[in-house]
Image: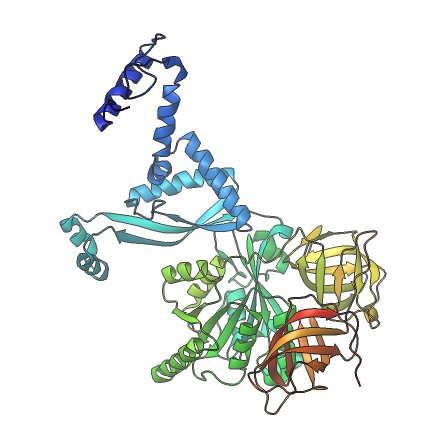
Length: 613
């Protein structure tokens, strides 16, 4: 190999030229070489399939810009498969960025190029039955000189300066791609718990968002959300209220007609929606903390919306609700309301107080003030991280900031924490007796899939036993559906069950024919952290324990320390006072006596109870 010729670009070019000429001339004869760089050896040109090799090489080197602006059939199929896969992965939607190559470099798209790219994308989306909406569009400049780039970005006369400086301008857009007209049982659903101190404007904001009309400053928008007469009279929520906001495939909110026509029912909204945001309106008053904690644990929210009145600041139950969200590991977004009536100095003081709490060692959040659509897109895409905390400033009377909140809710991604392949598990959060239907339960499917007619086990009862039942009807958002799958909030009509046999906190489980019956436990072991207690905690201490939809008083029968004080961690054995419950190892628990006292995680279920004195 010592006398081999050195390999150069010219060598490759000349040889490729000879091979192409030979192929095009139809020569079947022996060609120049078997070794590309040693002309003393020969090979058969017919074995090369040179045209395919060159085509594949050219295809591999095509940029994303070329594939978008001048797509071949192969490019179209590639994008079609990618979009279908991403839609399935995102449970019906995903965010796509146009304007950047795979390595992050700009494509240098002009306005005409962007229109052409969107036209080609729309043709592909027709084939996969999806729509798109532009969430954010901006100009960027590929500038090697930072000082010029800063000047270009900050000045209003940027386009003229860019032309003078010959700086390339490229358009970049974030596109929301969403499945068109899914069936009601497959609509993407996001659950958001709305918490905050009393009079922070929780119910009013939900009324404005879902009804599409502004408030009059005296609580008109919240009236449709109240469930009881005393709530209307006092203006204070005391129960868990539910409301939905739908978005269609083009990311437009589905609101009630403004001309005074018939109000849309949940069925009307779901028939037009491709995505539904379900709001869980919780009470802000300390008197109803028990109900609020149950709503945050039992309704399995994906996100928590913490409301802060700009004029009042961080007072009352605001810190308590923030602590609940942190202990349950739920991402939090903060909305500062009533900015239209708040003096600037008070608003500034509230913001400083809020940022200080979010950055504190016990919270460790990164505050992100949302002021533009670009902020909305970037923050919503990364919001699954528990560290980020978006902050909005809004007014329900003037409408300031509401469009940013709507866009944020529209973009919020689904949390893929539910598995439909596991056995069916459903936790009950409420029970009803419906005329001509029978016993109905509402709740959330934690795992698995169930269909009408499936036989399930319901329990545990007061003795810890499970009883058989069957599903005779399923509704999702008040619409009949044939099945319920993991992550969905549904109501089930049950056979052979009286309402008196039911209570909140029970579960429904699938059961194989020869499998052993599930067991409820009266005692369980948990690792706990005491958040606050004025004295000490020892054996026989009683507190209200919340774990999922389970809500029952329990006492401490054993602990690995003599006493517990504020800030202590310990392994504690709890015993339910009234009846056994269905728990799982790894589930988060909250125990409280009045306000929250501690948080923890279930580590062991005790089938052989510890004897207590």
